[in-house]
Image 1: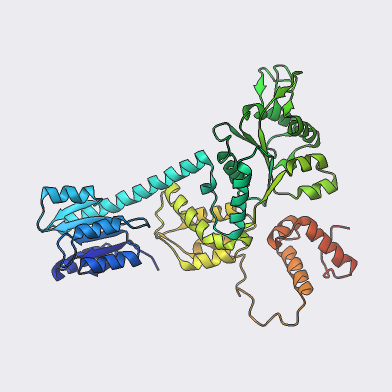
Image 2: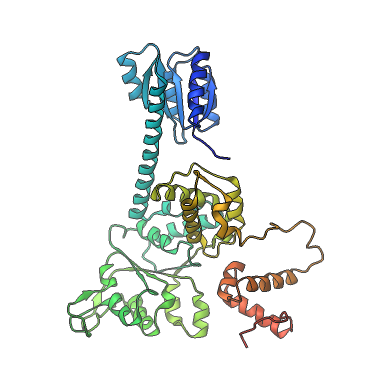
Length: 467
């Protein structure tokens, strides 16, 4: 059901109550009417309203006291429009000074009240947009903890680690699946540190070709290679006194891993084509969505570099392991995209929260944000409903959760085995994706499959490509 703007009318005259209620309902507002100031205060303490329309003269307390109480609320306070038959300039000035949006004198035309309502809600929408954009800019500038959304125990532990390491210059390795917000953590560490007034430089190791990576990291001299017509400073030099983030460091080629190791050990490097060592004071942070320890065992990542990076590890939990944060994230993205897409979202159907909480979110917070953006684009009447999330809903079993009592006498090992093979089938035998859905590492999944293979427990027709 669509939720409309909520308006509280406070007036002790039955005719005025009826007139305002009829006018407001005609414009599809959710209207509550009370006949005295104390009743209004009680309602305001129990329910959130978008607007209060109150007479100044009431049988108990006056409308100014209602105004003051409304403006003192901890939640986003409602706007207040004052109405009176005994208007004076002094009263009007006092009302506006105390935070009233407008002051209307009885008798008034219906058109006048409708124009005032339209102006107020347009103003309120603009005020919310401005406040949200200011918060976004502040978060982008500061990169603090406010930019990371989550109240779950798992995220509280992440926040505590960020606070602890921020006051040091230690190297930080941030691990987690794609879309969990690893770069936000890096920005938070930088912004909370003594280096926050110095540069924060990020380099995506997966996005830069190997032939250019050395120049990007350390810079080059003029003539160092074909096309090097001018000297260039590298990211490490640009980040001096500040922080550098090496995003997806697992993609860095082996020869550059050795050169990076020297920077971590000695805090110095040479530019490409140069002979002079350059000293830098840089905090190094790195992110990875792969198991670096497993890569070390496979020989694809340097063991000595791995231990240099592992000074202070921060592991971000996947969204499926902190589902209690999903409603907060939904509300955040709804507000964000209603502004950036210029489409007013008036309500989110409760079924949406249920559906999105059932999904496993292999793409994590980034995937959730994309889903909300797509839903806001396809929304038609100001309400987000389950049908706006068809790409997500189709991955959720129609029968919902398992029924109680159906797992009696089934061993945990058999349940685990069934979960693994069913997930692999759903993921078309993509082991990386299956591991993400199951919440285990690829290495653990590989070991489980090896165990099943050795025990002759692979299902008939299973594509075992590990032989």
